[in-house]
Image (cartoon, rainbow, N blue to C red):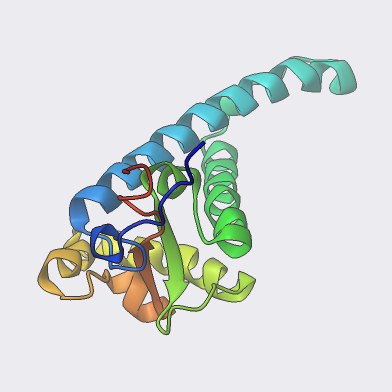
Length: 161
């Protein structure tokens, strides 16, 4: 029985700033996950509400209610796991983690702030995301505003012997 050798520090990406490709794939996973779980949750709610209200309810009939529910769900989906683990589902799959500027863990408040200011990067026709490519630390506009950064949180050489 042989012992597993520790990973070579030169092969480790742990703690390095995450690039645009990895962050984009993590965002796509989160986007799909938010949409799929919201659709599933809406279908369940539409099935259960008639049991309590005694009449059929279609959430899609009210664009305002549906939009508010989606925004609340997207906020909860992102802010809670970021505040607890520093990762959304998509970030966890891709080995990413959001941290404070100094590399320390996010607080719940900092995680919520990051999620709240995220749309600012989108509102400028996506120009806030150009900073990921332009800046050496790959921080988007919402990262700069919230005082966060996204780093790799896995070791590429961990499985090599």
